Image (cartoon, rainbow over all chains, first blue to last red; front, top):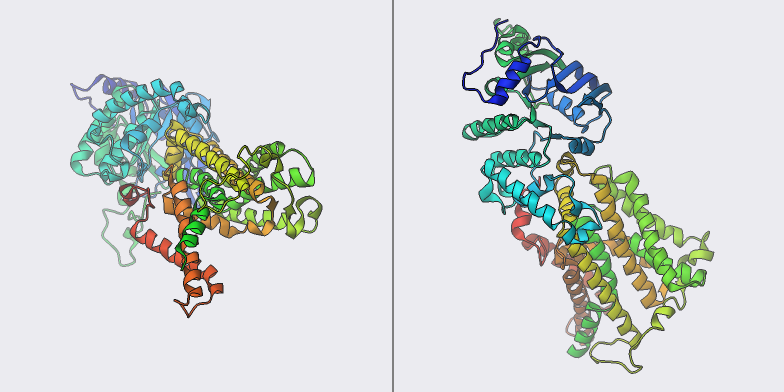
Length: 305
Length: 329
């Protein structure tokens, strides 16, 4: 397998992640030197369809890991399971060596595992600033009785606001502070959701298709933001089905197809993997179409799940 | 037509005891539905809990009214927990179904023969329910500041304390919704999953809103029992809840002063239309209706008015059109 090369002027976070992952085997479920998230035997069935059936997977701390696969591969379902938004039929997984299977999703968020959604969930009828403030953890003013005594939370609120403004400036949303989130464009909502997730000061941020529905110009800046998140020491796991996007930013790629992990490795290696190409284009993609339509059976169709 | 009677009746209703009861129920519903997005279709059950707490404690058990108020608050809290624990983890519509069913169940329970000794059956509990409150009336015997308002001295005492309660709860709601707590519940109204993903225990917040709204509604029932000195099961029909929704939408949901403005307009219009129609019929201006039709006609006109309001000003009197026009998804 050809070794990936490192861009000579890569930032320190990229160098560290590259070095850490250099000796990892390019096999599904391979062990990482410093995993933040480890999942075992996670499965989820919808009726007769096995949406997710992952034997073992580890996510390296401090790296950008991409979870890719064709539509319907089970990426979002795995995401929902790991973040507690859906319950698996079986499986155990740990976050920072702590068992978290069955933990309520809000507790996971407090532990430092925050996620975004494929269909952006900006809180439309709240201002951009209120969206951001909501992200801050451990707010005294969010307690029922303390909320009636503003002097107990004013200082904390001001500090959160300052942090929110810094983040919004980074994401070029500082001009929109007092606008309703619902008045933002689709791409800006993606940015807001990401900035809001960062307000929780997460250890790992899990982005579900951050680039979906975003115009090419904004995609470039989104990619830049994701890289910056890694440079600040936060682990990134993101779902994407466009391989080209993935190639540019990820340190490690995990490929899913039909609920299972079929390949892992640095982006260059994964893209040349014949199994991955088969999964994306169908095993018979190089054969001529036959009259019974056999070559069409693996055509990606429908929405991702 | 006698316009002084029309005006007198209309004003008396618009800011009178009935208005206060509906206003308190609407303030409670505003916390639940307006801010938190909980579809509580059984607000009348909380009002009934407050009213029956007074009836049972004061009339059936012959105990203090002050204890009855405490029992009313506890009863509303228990009712909210009972309704909320199974349903608040589910989708919003389940709460709607459960609350409307529970409110009817409660009404049928208190009017049943089996519990006649406690709740008084279909006749309810009638007696000097609010005597301890009326004994405290500091107003002079022949107190009547505004002759246009047809209140007795006893009514005025209830109205003063009632509006003070409204002011108190409005202040409480204002304090809550401008705080980070209010931000979390508004976030829940917009998108629950997003708030969960930011580490908030959504279930607890929804429960707090349901309990608080229920307690405020129960105070409406307490005022009812004290002012009218009686509680009757069939006054707590589901249509009470729908009038409260009308009031809330009229004034503007998720606005601190929405319930107050909504209540006054609702009762002003409802009574005003009724009075004008009866006077016009009696004077012979309208001959295709009889005075017995007025009761229904005024509700038909109210309904029409509400439809027009929803079409042309869906945000209510106080609402922000810009806010409502946004895609809420």
